Image 1: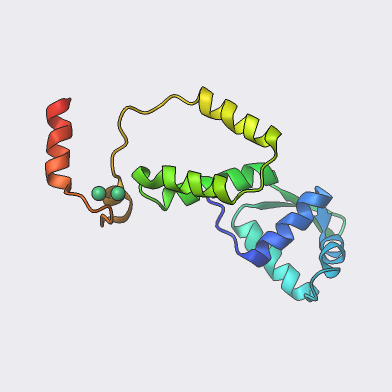
Image 2 (image 1 turned 135 degrees about the vertical axis):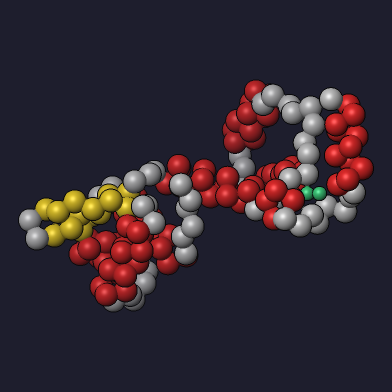
Length: 154
Ligand SMILES: [Zn+2]
Ligand SMILES: [Zn+2]
């Protein structure tokens, strides 16, 4: 599944995550405080999120109740995965170092990251996957000679 959602859709998702499940009125109420969106706008966003399978609907009387199909934590996990998918495997390390650099982290958080790092099994070789992913390589290296070297070493 892909979490390809806009900033506005994210605001709606956040409201529903807070409410756990909600009708249009409840969502409008929750969002109204910070955004002056019409109910029609919110309905459009809800429709898109249902189409993207981020929300499921059940009928309660004449009202639709919206329930998230995944938790905020799961959604953010998938977004992180998608971010890595947009970058060559060789550059994942740069993305991660930059994210750690930019994030606000407590000593406790850092400990958790250290633990995760210690538990991670290192890969012996990370190959450029630009060609498979984007059909064009931006890594400044020669694929033909490198692929040959990898084949020889196997
Ligand atoms: Zn690459
Ligand atoms: Zn490459």
